[in-house]
Length: 394
View 1 (cartoon, rainbow, N blue to C red):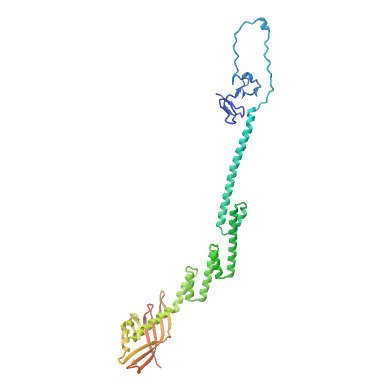
View 2 (tube, rainbow, N blue to C red; view 1 turned 30 degrees about the horizontal axis):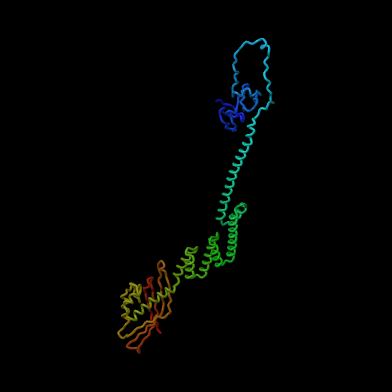
């Protein structure tokens, strides 16, 4: 085995290789080495492409010059020696230029087709990746735009993706129109300044980018109404509507201050109930009921300081003289109640009112009426903690 140049492409190969690994031309059994210059060429060529030596003289071997057969020597006659041996005339063919063989020329179109197909394949792959990247970019832009509430972002998508799928462009267009309508509705609600209009906007656009601002406006409107009315009921209504509103702390403080200054209807009811229970217990000489109406220790009771419940019972027994058969205290509905905070939301009430004492002695025909001006203090527990009575002379 010897290393030779491929007659077709010139690459170094083995002379025993079936075909050239570079150009695919057949090698083994298809080449010959010129005995004159050593050039390797295809054995179907008539002459060596390098020195134009005839091929027919070397077809019997591949790389060596054929050895002439040895003939037995014999003496020649004078006649034979004088006769010149004339070689046969062999027709010659025009010399071919040094270049690829006919077989190589036949293989050129095949190599061109293979190269063309390979180029088309590479172009197809490149186009696939380019188109895939373009689609991915469009998909990312579409998803981003659909999540955005900015009309500019959606319009930018439409401008930059003219060849996007119709489904994508349709969805973006619909969302863009929805946002434009949403902005228009918001402008109308703000201009109107109406709480109803803003609440309608919130109901129709629950996911609007203006939702926080809309709630703020409703909160502000309700707080303005509460402060204008400036009552406990108004402040409590605001807290009911906005438990965690922007002015919740202010409303709570305002309620506390107003409660500290204003006697509410339920408070008045409790105060009057305590006083009525006290005098009704006197009317019925109910010691237990009388004790349950006063605190264990009264700061002042009819001039006696640090009076006890026993002192109150003594007072009741004292006013029931032996000749009194019946007594009835009637409270006039002229209560004047003042209120003072004595603890955290604990209040003490000072009550001024008048009462009429009706006394019967010996029978209905012997009656006596007396009018008193009374001042009482009711502690946070709803018990009388002080009382003073002044008889009104007529």
